[in-house]
Amino acid sequence: MQHYKNHPIYGFAVSERGMLWHSRGVIFDPKHPTREIKRFECNDVICTSRKEAEEHALTLCRAWVDGLRSESKNRMSHS
Image (cartoon, rainbow, N blue to C red; front, side):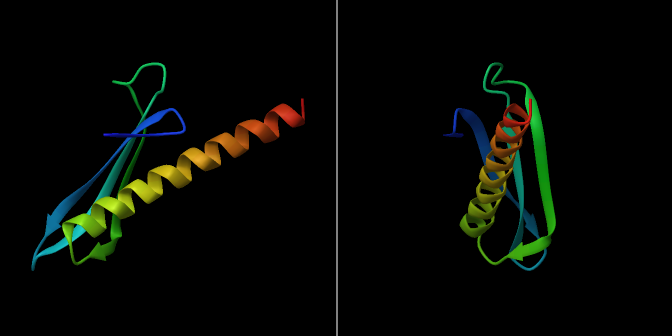
């Protein structure tokens, strides 16, 4: 488990046929680290290594957190 901008995130790989992998990522609530707030399952992107799939999952998690923070800032500036 890693932390990104105060959010615990977890990226892992799921094996496919032929030594291929796809990504899954989970983002947890910073205040309640056992509570999931977002889950990604990326079946469209197939990776050739486990590490590549795990990194892709973490990239998706980071992008989602960045989008969440950006959305929150926009709401605050329009209030």
